[in-house]
Each structure stands twice: as C-alpha cells, then as structure tokens.
Length: 403
Image (cartoon, rainbow, N blue to C red; front, side):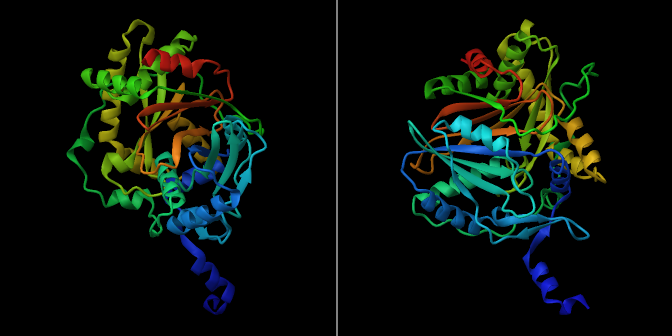
C-alpha cells in the first residue's frame, strides 16, 4: 500500500494544502495567460544581493506560500513546500521602470517554485528592490504585507512565522453574514455594446509603464475634498480616470474594474495570500459631469460592492471551471473594463529603510487593458500605470484632474 512508499509519505509531508476554489480559477487562467505583479521599493540603505537573499530567506520562513510551488499531478492541485530560495537577480539597467517592465515579460516558473522572485537595480537615486509574485499566492495587499515584513527584516527585526494561510472561501464561510450584505446596488450596470474582451497572446514583449506622484499637501487636499463630497480617494481616482479616458475618445460609459480587499471589507487577516474580490464601477457621461459628482457616484457604487463583497467572492468561487478555457471565460467576464484601478491604500511607514513604494505593476494578458496601481506611502499618493497600448501621458492627465 502507498503508506509504505517513502516517496509518497514525503510528498504528503511537503503538501501545504489544496488550492482554494478561487485560487484554482486563477491557476487555470495562469496556465494560459501569465499573471504576476510587482511591488517596487526604493531603499534608503545600501544592500548587497547576498544580504537581500538572506532577508528573503527569513521572509519565506515567515510566510509559507512564499516557499511553495504548485503540484497539479494528483487528484487535486496543491501548494507544495519547496526548499528553493526566492531568486535574486541584479538588473542590467539603472531604470527601475525598465526592470519592472521586464518582470512582466518573463513568466514565473509554476512547477519548480517558489512563486516569487526579486530584482535589484541601482538607480541614480539609490537601490530599488522589485518583488514579483505569481497571482496564485498573493494579491496586492498580500504583497504589501510581504514588503513591509521584508523591510522589518532589513531593519534587523524578527518577523514571527505564520501558519499556512487558509483559502479565502473557507475563511469567508466562517464570517458572520452582516445585514449590509443585502445592500442594493446603487447603479445598475447598463447593457454594453462594447466588443467582448479577449486575451492577448503572450509574446514576452515588455509593456509600457508610467508613474506619477502627488506630494503630501496635494494628497491631503484630495482626501479632504473627497470627504467633503462624501467620496473616497478611490472614488476620485475612478472619476479622474473616466474623464481622462473620455477625453482620449474612449466610448462611454466608462467601466472601471476595482478589486475589493476582503481584509478590510469583512475582517480577514492580513496574510500573504489572496483575499480579494472585484466589482465594476460604471460612470456615465464623464465629460459632462463635475469630477466630484463622478467621485461621489463611484464611491457609492464601491460602498455597495463592499457590502456585498463576501457574497460576490463566494459566488466567484462557486464557478468551478472544468478547464483553462472555462476559467479564461470567467475571468474575462469579471474583468471587462476600460481600466483597472488597484488601490492598495496606505503603506504605513513602519520602517525608515524605504523612501518610496510603488505598485502594483501588473497585467492580466487581456487585449487593450490598462492597469493603474495606486498606493499612499509617506503621505504621498503614488500611481503606476501599465499597458501594452499607448498610454503616453495618461497617468499625468489623471493626476492633473485630481489636483
């Protein structure tokens, strides 16, 4: 019997857990369309590749999915422990945007693992570390958790180890169902005449990346103005992006894909794992409306979606696609939009080792997609826009409308 087979016993011992339903959908999709994302950390302290590798080894000990590969060979797909370290590479460029773009052009090896890697680039402003994660093991907030803990390790502090994080479906089933889950949608999406989204054949061509930042005073002014209009910064970003795209001739209504963090929405723990669902914000006639009325509209839609986030996540997990083609169809239907805005919120300055944090840099291999990553670090709102299409000047247009 197989329990006498040492290799079988070893395999069982190294299995962390089966992929959850949503992780499995992502994994099937990635089998045809690489999806990985990067966080860039501008360091204030010098570091060698050996020093970074040592810190990443400690990070792997703290977060089990950073030391995992994916095994699809059995009856179910599982995360399996790997002894391989997170690889560290020194970029052959002094421009971190070029290095981050190259990370989107080279898929992470799914079989060997680990499902993360690091690139160092020595820029004119100092060392930048780019952490890249395959989407089965983390979302943007999970990547920020890893980045924060890496900075703590570089500060000489010990990050305690965590248990293998459970799938978000198992955690959501244990969450008390709030009455707000029944909140109605504020704006019913109208039938769209737009062509159906299709995937873009992966060709290893690096995408375009543009960045912009608002200073502390401008960021605080946006926050205060948003509050006075019953809006949020995310709502303002949606409004500004809608107006900028409309001005560029994108036929409306403008559709914005917005991931929803389940940590804040329903109180899930801050693990390096996937803890998200998504919604589509639909903004009509952006050129004829004031930015802050658009922002209030977007915020109301986002609040309604957050109130339904648990049900939405469980619904997505129930799809159970049979193969990669079905997973692809499900993902395309869920992400049909003119732009995705992934706002990772505030990255708290727990460490002085980071001067600036940017991201996520990300694409999902959908034709014509634009992905805007947003986060606030050191009081400054930082935007990172990635696309294979012409986006020249678009991120500046968005920040210009905000400020």
